[in-house]
Length: 194
Image 1 (cartoon, helix red, strand yellow):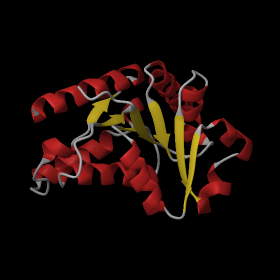
Image 2: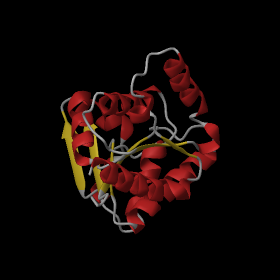
Image 3: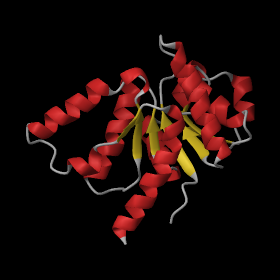
Image 4: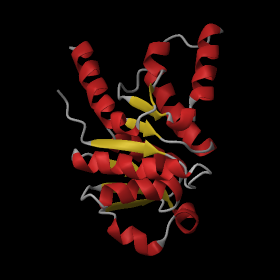
């Protein structure tokens, strides 16, 4: 079985209005560190980005932060970057997203805004097109992703998703269950491929 050694986490660069999201992001980071799974993320130190990275680093885990140069002042605190063991600055968003994809064995999406949505939708699209078979999970904290899943179901009912089983992500509302579910999904995908 291929070991999950890194997970890309997509999430908001702000904390949102629900304070439980930030605590959950930190807890997710801890869960990853305890299993020796490297965090790959957008490199920010604010909001949910900072919380998940903090949760990993506070528990002895490894972090790869990837950020485009134009977001350096907006999404990070310079002294906090010293703690990240692998920090990459790219010229543009496309390079950032490609590197995040290449360095991750799976994807988890916490609550976030339009950028977060765009990132997970791209991974779902690539899965539908057969570009990857990596597990994708939505951390459905307080039902945050329910409207998105409703939209996916609506697209399928309308006949626009031809391989829905490939793109429908795991929908998990318990933050403690997310990393184990990703590990289990990766094992199932490998078994199905053999």
